Amino acid sequence: MSKILIGKYEGTIYEADGGYIGAISLGFGSDGRRQRLKRRGRTKAQVKERLIRAVKDLEAGVISSESYTVRDAVEDWFAKGLKGRSASTVETLRILADKHVIPLIGKAKLQRLRADDVDEWLDELTEVLSTRSLLTIHSILKRAIRQAQARDLVLRNVAELVTTPKGRTGRPSKALTLAQATAIMTVAKTSTLNAYVAVSLLTGIRTEEARALRWDHVVAWVEKLKAWRPVTEVGFDHKKFAIYVWRSKRVGGDTKTRKSRRTLELPHQAAEALRKHHKDQAEQRLKVGEAWQEHGLVFSSAVGTPLDSHNVRRSFRAITKQAGIGEDWTPRELRHSFVSIMSDNGVPLETIADLVGHAGTRVTEQVYRHQLKPVITTGAQTMNKIFGDSQEVESA
Image 1: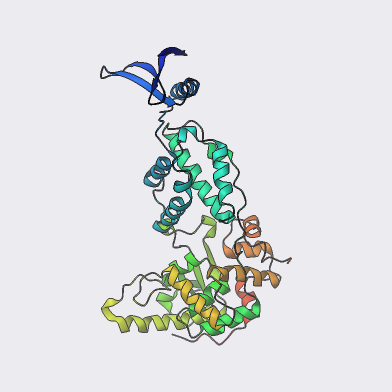
Image 2: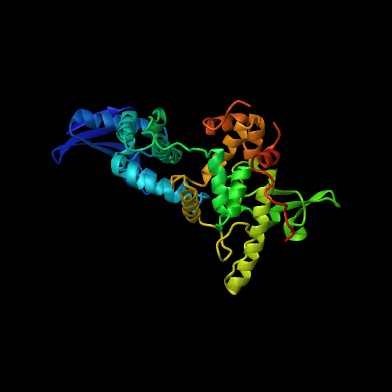
C-alpha cells in the first residue's frame, strides 16, 4: 500500500484482484460516515491518473461515477429528455438507439468516452447508414450527454467535438414530371385518396398538414359578404375556395413553424375534388351510422378517425403503380412536385417559399434545390393554367 496526495486530498493505492484500487478520503458526511472516492486500474499509474481526473471533476461540481455508461445516459435521456415529443418521434429515435447506439457504444463509461471513440463509432456506420440517419444517431448521443452534463454526471460533451461523417447515398426525394402528375391525378379520380392527392399536389401542403385539415378550415368566398366563410356554413355553391393551413399532425397540433400558417386559394381541380369528397364523406357517415367518430377532418378513415400515414403511403403507391410510374414514390413527393412544376412555369422563388410555408427562400433553396429552376403569378392561378379548370364547381 502506498500513500498519495492529490491537491488537498489524501489517499492510498493498494493491490486488489490482480490490479490496483485507489481511494481518496473526502471526510465525513452529514450522517457521520466516512466518504471515499475510489478508482480501479491495471497499474498504479493508471489508478492515480483516474483519481486526479475524478478530483478535478469533483472540484468542478461533477458527480463522477465510473459505472455510469453511455447506455445509462441514453436511457436517462429517453426517460426524461423527450417530454412533449410525439409517440412516433420517440419510437423512431428508440429504434435507432437500440440498433446503432446502445449495442455499439453503450458499454463505454461516459467519464472515459473520448472524441476518438465517437469518431470511430460513426465511421463504422458510414457504409450502412445514410447521412441523415448518421446525423440523427449522432444527435441522440449529443443530446443524451448534454442532459448528463446538466445533471453534473460528466464534465464535457465529447460528442459535440465530432463532425458527423457523410453516409451512404440514399434515394433522394424526387419530383413528378407534368405528364406523370397528370397521369396520377387521372388515376386518383377513382380512388378514395383523390381529394388528398389533388390538394397536396396543387397546393404543396405538407403531408401532416393535409392529414390535419378540417372542414371548417376549408372556406368559400361569399360575393355578397365580400368575405371568406367556412364551407360548413355556406356550402360549395361558390366560385372561389381556399384552405387555412393552420394545423398539422405534429406535437401540439401546430404547423411546423408560425410562418407555416398560411391561407391558400384552391385551384379549381382541387376545389372540385374537395366538393365531391365532402359529398362522398357524408354518404359514408350515413352508411356506417353509429360507428362514425366525428373529428371534423377533411381526410379521414372510413369511420371518421385520423388517417394513418402508413395507410396513406400504401394507397398512394397503388395509385402511382396504376399510373405506370412504379411504386417507388411517397406522398411527400407531391409537395416536391408542386415546387418543381411551379418553378418550371416561372414562379419566383419568393412566391414558392410563401406558398409552401417557408420562413424565407434559403430554406426553400436547401430543401428543394433539385426541383428549382430559374424564374409569374401565384399558386392557384398557375395551377389553373397548367392543369386547366376541369369542370365547373357544382353546388353540393
